[in-house]
Image (cartoon, rainbow, N blue to C red):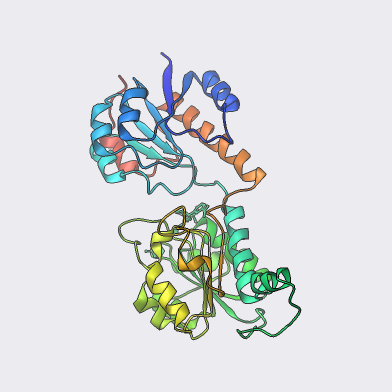
Amino acid sequence: MTIKVFQIDPVPVLAPYTYEKEVIRNAGGEMIIGDCNTPEDVLAQAGDAEILLLSWKNIVPPAVMDALPNVRLIIRWGVGYDQIDVAAATARGIAVGNAPKYASEDVAEQAIALLLSCARRVSWFHHRMQRGEWSAANSNKIYRMKGRTLGLIGIGRIGAAVAQRAIGLGLNVIAYDKVLSDDAVRAVGATPRSMDQVLAESDYISVHVPLSAATRHLINAECFAKMRQGAIIINTSRGPVIDEAALIDAINSGHLGGAGLDVFEQEPLAKDSPLRSMEHVVITPHMAAYSEEAWHGLRVEVCEVVSEWIRDSWSSAVVNPQVKANLRPRA
Ligand code: NAD
């Protein structure tokens, strides 16, 4: 029996998915490339697919899960899977998977790049040089990073990779993780702290938690008030983890020294967003996960998850393992 694998929203950079089609065919499946922009498109195109592959679009609501009884697994091309209603999938016996190893090193590099750019004012000087200026005068003080404290909120794969790099820069790394034990935090070279301690003791804070109902606006006005005067915040996780309006206020008031952001509450970032023109803010367009190596690794990892599923009706990349008890039977 050939297992159908439906790519909901293909991305041009991977088209025509030659590598994926071949690996999936060798595993006993068939990859079908869709072109979906709405839930109705998914309903019309997915046919009897068992596995749905989702790049970015939030277009598989519970009603689509109900109307496609053959679907047993939805895989997000990436680490974050906030585009998928996992609770609804679980309730319907559908597994949700991701590519957990994808781009940890790359996102960590981007977090450090944003931190260095903010702390050393690289982007600020760069823009002035582009305008023909030549002056070391600066509206913000610059402090040597060595010996200062970086606080990590979430120290899973990416947070740990940031810690490793930050230690190399001479930073003292402290971290709060809601799930990991203190020993696990220490094992990657960070000192465990409570959330409030991280907020109060850090010169720089970098956020690395998944987006969920529990982490939406985890970093809000109250948190900014607890942060040190002049502190810099870096976010490469998901935009809604930070209350963006509160962040803008905290920077405009002079309390925060700056922010380095790869992710935003609304993406693409609005053309008139104040973040685009704030001089203490460095922004990149949700590209932290990109590198040639990361994209290659992602393709391999997603194909491994699909192949594993075709072979075992299961994968170690399933993020809702409790679904095993009521997994939909294969049609
Ligand atoms: P991970 O699952 O390995 O680590 C996340 C950590 O956050 C875990 O240790 C978890 O215990 C902790 N955590 C969860 N809720 C928390 C809370 N409320 N407070 C403190 N800690 C909490 O994930 P990862 O690979 O490190 O990735 C982190 C996030 O980065 C992803 O969920 C994804 O949204 C984002 N990401 C962004 C990009 C990008 O392009 N900018 C790329 C990859 C991943």
